[in-house]
Amino acid sequence: MEVITKINEMQTRVLSVRDRKKSIGFVPTMGALHDGHISLIRSAREENDELVVSIYLNPTQFDNSDDFDKYPRQLNKDIEIIRKENADVIFTPCTEEMYPDGFCTHVTQDKLTDALCGGVRPGHFNGVTTIVTKLFNIIDPDRAYFGQKDYQQSAIIKRLVADMNMDVDIRVCPTVREEDGLALSSRNKRLSLEDRKDALCIHGSLQKAGAMFASNVRDAKDIVEEMTSVIKKTKQARIDYISIVNADTLEDLSFINGRALAAVAVWIGNTRLIDNTILE
Ligand code: PAF
Picture 1 (cartoon, protein in one colour):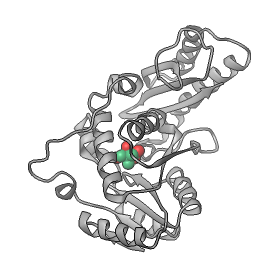
Picture 2: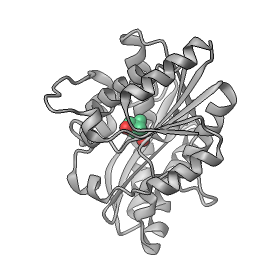
Picture 3: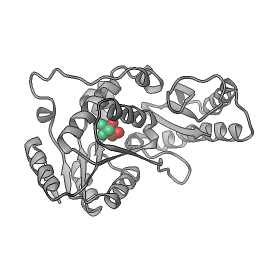
């Protein structure tokens, strides 16, 4: 496995893979890897000849400098995890490589970025679409892998590749959970023991939404109200948003009559966690 930090070296490697007519699978990450990332890496390993995993903590997608500063960093451990998964390349550039002096071009998207996290994290998705465009341009993958926990991110990236005619197949893999239902996230590493217990209200609220939907409740307000009361039982949890949206357009729904997404963002202490479930 090769660890590459320079863009031109990564591009040379990609050209040699292309010369050999091999496919490239790509898993972009910000490090602090957990089993959710590993499941993406395994799917990518299975479906492609060459597997590239990137580790780059992208500053432009953090709307809050405290969140960036506190984001867990464990590069050496991550490299060992990826090595064990039999990747061919880790691409881990520095910020001077990705955003050199004079950098002033950004990729932005309308509509899908207004909803959910876009409404409460200004600029976040512009940072994501910009860095993902750059990574796709450098790595030229056939397939790229994202997790359903970041549902909105995956929807935005699918739209990005369609709108910009990028020839990349976007694969969205199921959310990986702890046994008690907590969705795996790099930010979970920041939870205290108490926070960890409190965080369970997030999955509890989504289970409530699923159960109401299964018993034919279709009024989104009723479902959101019940989800809110599940979360409010946990005194330390602060709701950022609870929304039921059309799963394709991410527009708010008052009545569910097609594929819908129940999505939640909640602050547990100083850590903001997100999760979602599809209602269909
Ligand atoms: O999901 C993430 O970890 C990041 O948003 C991504 C896709 C690696 C871009 O920085």
